[in-house]
Image 1 (cartoon, helix red, strand yellow):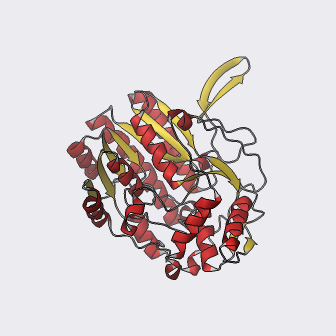
Image 2 (cartoon, rainbow, N blue to C red):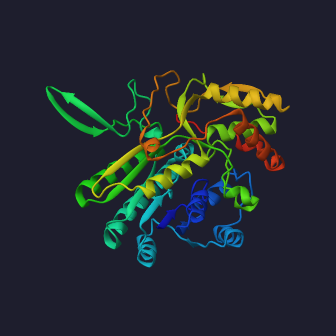
Image 3 (spheres, rainbow, N blue to C red):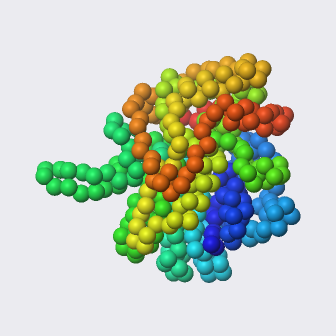
Length: 382
């Protein structure tokens, strides 16, 4: 398979490039280095120093004798993206190339405007490039479980059967986002669904929960192949942040009561989910939605897990409940259905004590690079 990965320099993008390449697929990676530049601007750089995308590709080729073709460019520039599609004519395109942070989208008007423009124009450009170059190309779009919010009913896998006044129909599950970033992801889904119905393109929309972890089979071959790893308030997911806080001797920042519950998955399982989706593509004229998670935890449960392992390893972990800067339900019902990826063959990696211990061990090697000022910058929704 010839696969185009957009956002290839990111926390998910680079490990995905390695995963497909290791399995013999032809990989083309594209990135505009947005997150690297934003992290410098906001003083929240990656814990692990990462070579640029071209250097990473060279390191991978030296180790594996497999080539990843990389390009630097912005896919909101349609002519640039179209040139990539024409040069490679990919069988599938994985779309990670979005501003990925809820807090970033809530900093100010300019960051909000950038989030809207970047996320929606990038998705629109991909749709048009697919139509113009290869309408059979499978779009694999990274969505988010945050699109659903926390409804007081079970969260179905993308779709909901409705009976109203004696009539029945099937609709996309109602969305109620908790940030502007999540709102753009809803708009992505709506846009894709429109063009599936109109042009008959094929799309898999992956509603992914927060991802954690540093280790993948390919990245473990050389420290320079590790993913860009953020632990800060803006770009770091909650468990990643907690682990680094524990290693740094900084109290775990639990927002509010800590009862907020979400579905989580290991970085290794993101690789599996995207790969399985690519190998078993959606049908022409289908918007296929998968809920991408393996288990659910409250923030308190994660904090207690990190404390238990951290204390065992001698870190004397403290937990601090701070005022919640977000506007969200802290006590809520949460029951998610997620069978689709398991049916494709997903073999989950669960959050065991052994996984947490290895996470602590890797993080501790970079303890001197931890910037404690990045843990909490006080970005508020109101």
